[in-house]
Amino acid sequence: MADHLRGALTRVKVQVSGQLPVDVDQLAREAGHEWRERLLSPAVTVRLFLLQIFNGNVAITALRHVGQMTATASSYCEARARLPLTLFTRLFDAVARQAADVMAGSPDGGGGGAAAATATLLNGRRVLLGDATTFSMPDTPELRDHFGYPAGQRPGCGFPVGKLLGIIDAMTGVVVAALGCPLFSHEAREMLSLHPLLRKGDVLVADRGFCSYAQIALLLRGGVDVVMRLHQRRPVQWARDQRVIWTRPVKRPQWMSDALWSSLPQELTVRLVRYTVPRKGYRTRVVYVATTLLDPIAYPPQTIMRLYGHRWNIETCFNQLKTHAKMNTLKSQSVQGVIKELIVYLIVWNLVRMTMAKFARAADVSVWRVSFLDTLRGLCALLQAAPAGTLRLLINPDRPGRWEPRKLKRRIKEYDLLKEPRQNLKAKHRARYA
Image 1 (cartoon, rainbow, N blue to C red):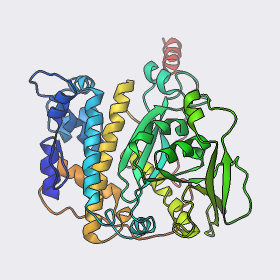
Image 2 (cartoon, rainbow, N blue to C red; image 1 turned 180 degrees about the horizontal axis):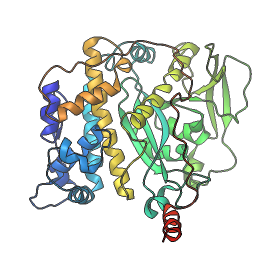
Image 3 (cartoon, rainbow, N blue to C red; image 1 turned 180 degrees about the vertical axis):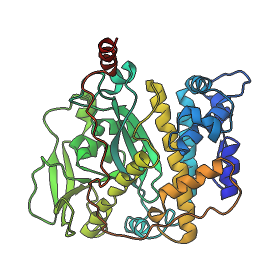
Image 4 (cartoon, one colour; image 1 turned 45 degrees about the vertical axis):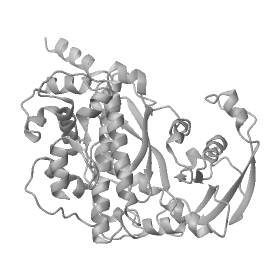
């Protein structure tokens, strides 16, 4: 596997074992992109982009060391800007399709443990986890106008913040679909654009932010069941397992057309499951889950409880992307550049998850126990033409119910907060000491 990944990626081909390679130059031609014969061709540029992300979104000036290229930083930036956005979306789709093919060859989705138990409980149905996370970017007028400032920040004293809406496979952690959107757009509304990417028979697990009448009705229309935390505004009864009838609200959401709203059914039958979290350290003790899996025999309350418990895995995935892979702060200064950077992050993520799944299957452990950071470092070394060898990854111990306080031990340096643009402070300093 080590030779395969190194050979495929260093030849600028994103390839999964046993599948045909993806030719980046050919994808660029199919996207209508034309270029002259030069050093930074689309294949070479994408390879450098992957190397940059694999190395923790390293500075562009460091690519001459990790990528062994003599191109200047400005040339690389211009080459990235020339590549069409369609090339990156097609590349992501190709990697996602190959990932699905690889995972389909594994009977338990790449590991045993809780993931295999979920597949068994749901009779092989694909379980997807949906959620959103935020990321920051440079403070440029274009990004500020498109993504928006968080509340309370003064112009010139903060950074624009965007939102990444993602859907991952619950068994492997592979990103199935994703969307980058402005900060103040509601994720439940943006999720509607991802509905066509789901398949009939899927089960979507999400938190209470997605639990709305319109969301569930549209998903059911496409044959997708849901398991969602009940919205806090919904009235509940003290019953462990019950069916309720939801009627269509009188007021139509502003973002939904009259025709689409009128096509929704007048009533929905939803099952509410209540369970208690007995562990110490958990914030909520009683949880209400709304689901369209109505059969209590095929899907008993214990199954619904265990299924919703997997929702936290997407939080772990986002944390690994933002903390270990450094996606918390992007570097592109244009809207298209930010979207390209997000897509390459997701491509790298899927490559890492596929490697973790293969190793987990060989070691007969759950894929969620394989170290993401160790896999990222291993693939990064392979990309930089490290000596061939067996890729041996770290397996984390099984620690169910582990809880750590969200507190920092290492003190941060105490500096004053920036309360006006930096240029103003520099001008005042120059005027004072002129």
